[in-house]
Image 1: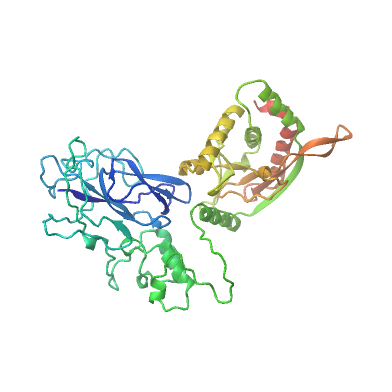
Image 2: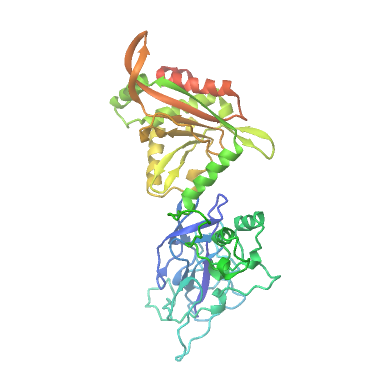
Length: 481
């Protein structure tokens, strides 16, 4: 007899509590192998393909594309094949020890919550019944897509024999939104949802969630907060879908774009930076003519081409060696400044999904050629949506080349929890006094925004002046090589 196993959205790491379904990679009725990607989700950090740790037939999918699910919410259910002997799995026989084929192999992936070498001993069991000729097809209830007819399940997924059709009924009670008693548990998984409700004085017991099995999502809380005039617990509050927004009285109708995914993460991070960091900005114009000539000479000498961004990154890492105060972070809880021995250099990159900041690990130990290759790899991954959470976290200093947008200057916002960001404008021909005479030179504006808690203006000015000196006279870098 087949067994239906539920695969929940795993913890994708980096403290992420929810993800949005971007694209389903499987349909109900498809046969999936162990560790086969089944859905593509977008988190606040990156686009991720989520592999399923079970092998079998997909019997249900939970959530349409565009739906936001919290970590721990059901993604799919998979019917796995019966043992070769045909015996049903006993209560004392955990999957992976004489259990269903496909589940015994264990998952090789290591997303938090599953991915061990041996399948977990305890899994949620869904009641199944032995089909009879007169039995009607089983259906599911709720927002999920489910098989409405008996699914064909391989008798043994590892064998080459033709699969024998096996009915996989699904217990409707397992997916129906539970009835909550006034003093019963509240179906909330995300700590963010609980905190949002607590900070706004909202009683979660009065809401009915729109998620799987009545799960209360952040959108349910936000919809309730948008309609304060409606009585708490009324149907208007409890069943507002994510796409319905009630305009505030007196406001004009217009297009409303949800702040979620990458855009939402950027908004939250920038707001936190402005709220917590007392930043200041200084800037200087520099003659980049010699830097451009040095780059041209390097590329003319043969070998891989060196990018301008790589040279600017090399200048940054050299300047941070002299001014380590800016390669730091503030631990507000301990009231300490943490200075880092390494430089994990972030760089701002614009993609179709929005602004992302990939991080080059140990940039201080790389030469210009290695930096060029890593910038190219991370930029391509960002455009293709393949950046992982690890690629987007852990930076200690950020380089922002906004000159690619054709602008001369800007006042960057510090990338929290870092302490500083260097901005670089476009390099354009301008009149410049060079060696006592007016000449046309390649001029660039450099700006530094820094956390005033980690240093004073003298240190920030010294850092920026050293960067400008290296831009004007690349030979200055030879002192640190």
